[in-house]
Length: 99
Image 1 (cartoon, rainbow, N blue to C red):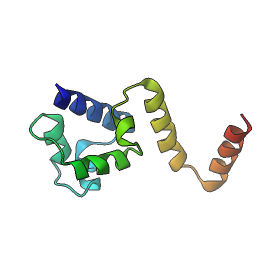
Image 2 (image 1 turned 90 degrees about the vertical axis):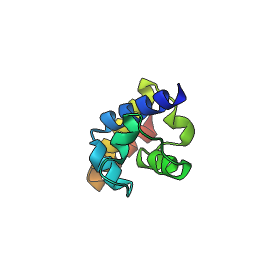
Image 3 (image 1 turned 60 degrees about the horizontal axis):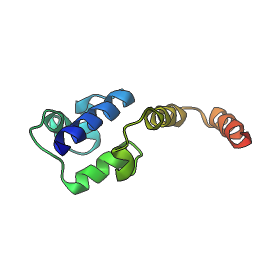
Image 4 (image 1 turned 120 degrees about the vertical axis):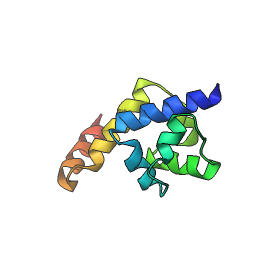
């Protein structure tokens, strides 16, 4: 039961981020099929790798298990902000701080 919830949340976060299972596996320093094996129920990550997965998505372990659209929206916004040039990012931060 919990394993299925974990797998579904991992798939949701990965798909929202627009990253392949292979690329995520390699980013975590694992074999090419590592995330795919987790998502297919063949294995579960160790606690240390779970923490790396949380870091990968910029989430706390508690946030990992919160499946709501606001968390997903914030994650996607964060991903887009990280790719902006410094000048544009500065403007957006100014607008946010003014709210």
